[in-house]
Image 1 (cartoon, helix red, strand yellow):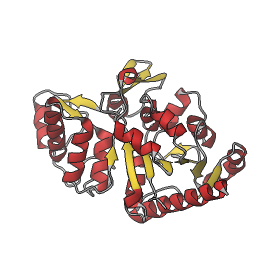
Image 2 (tube, helix red, strand yellow):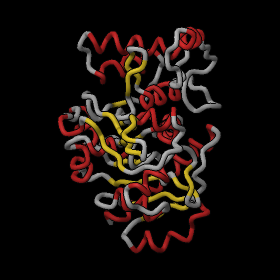
Image 3 (cartoon, helix red, strand yellow):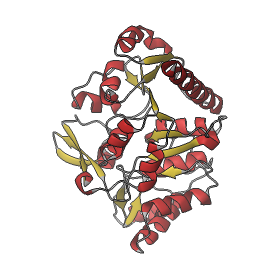
Image 4 (cartoon, one colour):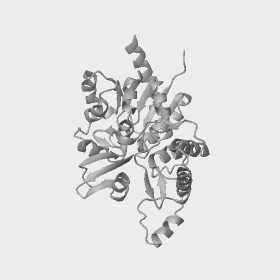
Length: 319
């Protein structure tokens, strides 16, 4: 029997939490992560990859647990000096974090691929679960608001998600090429887990990379999504506004609609028990369990339960 191969599609804090859960589970050695790069942007001449760095810092136990992003034990002397020099400093980049961005930018200018840079940064922080990128090309999420188009970081950090969302686009997506590592991992997956990430700008940006969603659909893997909603509300982030802008309902139905062409199972919180019958009527297997992940134990317990449920359900479907 061949070794189990698990792929986690992950973005944002929810994706990092799911990644930590798998990394501490019995399935860590079977797992690879495909992360979101469409939140990337340039600040102070440096290339910043927020979702990838959140994955690396979380898995390397360097994350600021209170914020859910950035480095722990951080200082902000460089940012204070930049502010004194009249620079915009709404994107909070600490001194340790800046070292990551200096390193990434220098290698990027030398022609080193984003995938290789990510691998080197992960190695620096002793991350054992491989982090793959869907593309090495630049793809950036843009959000249309009544005030005009904003980068995702402008919308999310500077505007605190306050503006109405009229439209979303992934700038550069048409010319992006998928990485061979991501395509190979998806093709060889027994199980694909979609983290409780924003389905529009985190998971959606990954799937929008040419060939990625097609690879997922053709993979033959059992595909299970953990809903990022609990009682119609997001734990963190603007997923509710993004779903609404895409014309989808802010509930289990809306999450299913994002993944309906390939999904076989969903994980929903106990408070959303009433959604089970509808989801099952769509042909899905449904796991109802507490999905809020605050502690390391809760992360590990949830992801272990998700894998075990998926493997059992896959076996039943094959019988």
